[in-house]
Amino acid sequence: MADPRYTAAKLLDKTLKSGSYSNIQLNSGLERSDLDSQGKKLCTAIYYGVIQRRITLDYILAQYCSRPLSKMDSIIVTILRCGVYQLLYMDSIPDNAAVNESVRLAKQFGKTSASGMVNAVLRSFIRGGKKIFSEPVNDEILQYSVMYSISGELAESLINDYGEEKARRFAEFSVESEKATFIRRNPLKCTHEELVKALSDVELFTDDELCYRLESGAVISTNAFKSGFFHVQDISSQLCCEALAPTENDCVLDICAAPGGKTFTMAEMMNGRGEIHAFDLHEKRVKLIREGAERLGLANISAKSGDATVYDENIPKCTKILCDVPCSGFGVISHKPEIKYKSLSEFERLPEIQYNIAQNALNYLAVGGEMVYSTCTVRKAENEAVIERLLKNYPEIELAELPLLRGRKYTNPVTFFPDDFNGDGFFVAKLKKVK
Image (cartoon, rainbow, N blue to C red; front, side, top):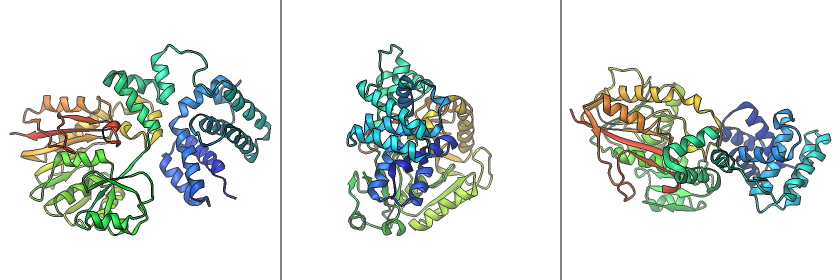
C-alpha cells in the first residue's frame, strides 16, 4: 500500500542531496506514486514543510542528538526532520503517531539499528515541551534565522534593507501563510461567467474579473486551461504588466520573456493587437512562449531566442519595454523554499548582469516610450541600486508615474511584499525616455 510518509522522506533525501528544485522533484515523485489524493496531500505537506523549516528543524535536532547531524546517515536525519516537523507544525497528527511512524520509517529504510535513537530523540523533544529554543538566545540574527528558517546572512540583509518588523513579516509569510495560486483570465477567449462555469470544481476568488485566486485544485489539467481560457501567473507578476500598461497601439519588447506569463498578460491587455517581440536566451524556453501563445490564441506575439545583454539591430524601436531581469528569486521563497538556503555570494554578480540587460534594453526604447524594470526579489542591491545607477548614467531617462494598481496609488519604484496581496515579493520601477 502507498505510504505518504515514506514517499516524502525518500523524495526529501533525494532533493536535499541533489540540490534540485523542490517543485520538480515533488511533482515527478507524486506522478510515479500510487498515492490517493489524501496521501498526496500529506506527502506534500511534510515534504514542503521540512524544506521550508530546515534550519529550524536542524537547530532543534542539534539540541537532542548526541552526534552532529553531518555525521549521521542522511535518511535518518531526514526521518528525524519529518518527525519533528509533524510534532511541531502539524496539529492534526497526534504525537504518538508522529513518533511511531518515524520509528517504522527507520526500519522500512533498513536502518533498524537507528530506530531506537529516532524514538528517543522525538520523545525527548515532546518531554521538553516541543520548544524551539531550550534556553534563551540573545543573538537577534540567530533568533530570526532559526524562527523563520532563513540563513543568518539573508536575515541580516533583509533587516538592513527594511528594518526588523518588515523583514520579520516577510520571513513569517514565507513559512506560515497559505500559498495561493493566481490565474489570469484570457478575455479574448472567455467571459468571467464562462470561466467560473468551466472551473466549477475549483473555488475561485476574484479581484477584478481578470485576476483570480484559488486555494486548491489542479487547474492545469482542466479543459478550460487547454482551451486557453487562462494562464497561471502570480498577482505581483500581473501588477508588473499593469504598471507598464501596454495598449494595442504599442510596439512592445519583452526582453527576458520565458516562460511567457507576462508576455501573455500584455498581449491580452493589447486585445491581441499591436505587436510584442518576446526574447529569451534559450530556444527551448522560447518554445514555451510559442506554445503558450498558441494555446491562448495570441497572434500578436513574436518569440525568438536572443541574448538580452547584446544589442540586436533587427529589433525595432519600441514604445513599451518590459525588462524582467534574472534575479536571486528571494521574493518567491514561499513557492521555492530551497532558494533561501543559497549563499548570498552566489548572487554577487547579478546586479552587474541586471544593469547590463537594462542598459541594452534602453537602446530599443523610443523617445517618449516607457520601460518597466522588474525582479522577483526583494534585495535592494538588485533593485533600487540598479535603478539609481541607470538614472545617474542615463540623463535621457527619468522615473515615470505609475498608474493606479488595484485601485491603489504607489510611489515609483515599488516593492510588493507578500502581505500586500498574498502574492510573491516583487520589485517594479517604471522609467520614461524623455529625450
